[in-house]
Image 1: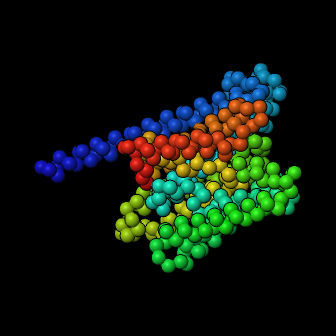
Image 2: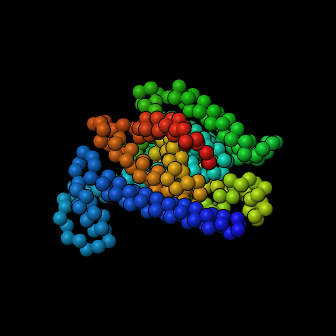
Image 3: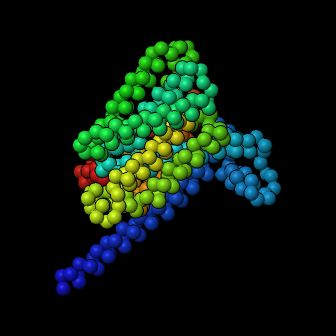
Length: 353
C-alpha cells in the first residue's frame, strides 16, 4: 500500500518539474527574441522596431524598401554583428559556467576556473605589446587560452590525489602565473599608446564588433555549446558521484574531460573577441537553477537563453548610459557582484550545484 501510494507522488513531482522547465524555456526564448529586436532600436541613431524587422527580413524576402540606406547600414553593419556576438558570448559564458559547476560539483566554479580567461588576457596583452593587428590580438588570445587549459589539464591529470581538486588547484596556479605575466606586460608597455589599449581590452567590450569577429568566434563557440547541450543528460550522472556514474556505464573522467574541453573552447573564443567579461558565467547559472532547477536537461538551455539576453541588455546599457561607451566588463561586475551577494544571503537559497 505504501509503495503504491509513493509512486504517483514521484511521478507527479517529476511531471511538475518537467512542465516547469519547459515553460521557463519558452518564456526565456520569448524574452530573448524581444530583447534581440528592441536592442536594434537603441543607440545614438534611432531605428524603429518595424524598420528593423523589415530590414532583417528583406535579406530573404522581397519586401519593398521603406527605410533609408543609412538605417539599413546601421542595423546590418554595426548593430547586427554586435548583438549576435553578444548572444554568443553571453549564452556561451553562461553555459560554460553551468557546465563547470556541474562537472566539478563546485558552486563557485566559473569560466575562468582553469585559467582560460587569464591565458587569453595574457595572449591579447602580448599581441598588443608587439604591435599586432586586431586579428592577431584575437588569434593570440584564443591560442593562449587553449594552451593554458591544456597545461592545467596535464598538470591536474599527473598530480596525485583527487583529480577534480587537482584540476582546480592547477587552474588557480595557471591563473596566478598568467595574471602576473599580464601585469608585467602592462608595466613595460608604452604608457601613451599600448597601455591604454591593453587596459581597455581587459575591461571587456563589444564595441567595434565586425562580421569577421563574429565569424571567428561563431564556429568554436557553436561547437562547444552544441556539445554541452548533447551531453547534458549524462552530466546529471556526475552529481551522483564517479562510482555511481561508472555503475551506469558512464566513464566519469572521460565525460568530465569532454565537458571541460567544450566549456574551455567556449571561454577562450568568447574572451578572444570580447575581452574579459566576468560574472556572467557565475551568476546566470545560479539564477537559472532557481527558475528551472538543477536538472541539466533544462539548466543548460536556460543558461544559454538567459545569458544571451542578459549580456545584450548590459551592452544596451553600455551604449546608452553615457556619451562615451562604458566597458561592458565594468557593468557586469556592478550588476553581478551585488546580485550574487543577494543569492548568498538569501536564507532559503544556499548556493548548491
